[in-house]
Length: 79
Image 1 (cartoon, helix red, strand yellow):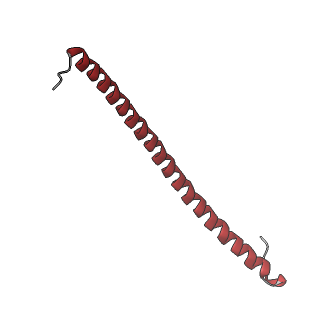
Image 2: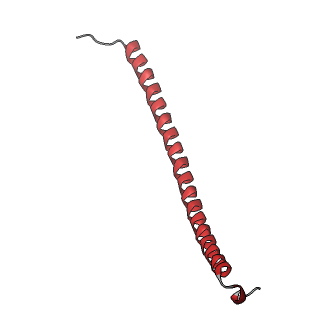
Image 3: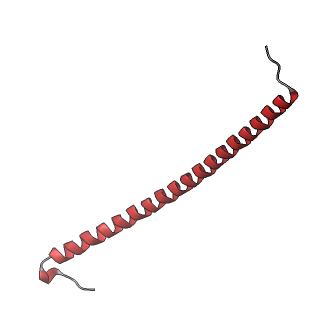
C-alpha cells in the first residue's frame, strides 16, 4: 500500500476544489438558462393566448361582415 505525500494530497485537494467550483458554476449557468427559458415560455404562452383571443374577435367580425354582405340588397342597413 502506497501512502500519498502531503504535496500529493494538497495537489489533489486543489484539483478537486477547482473541479467542484467548475461544476458549481456549470450548475448555476444551467439554472440561469433554465429560468430564462421558463420566462420566455410564459411570455410566449401569454402572447399565444392574446393572439387566439384576437383571432376569435376577428373571426366573429368577419362572419358578421359576410352575413351583411350575403344579405339581400334591400335589407342591408348602413351605419
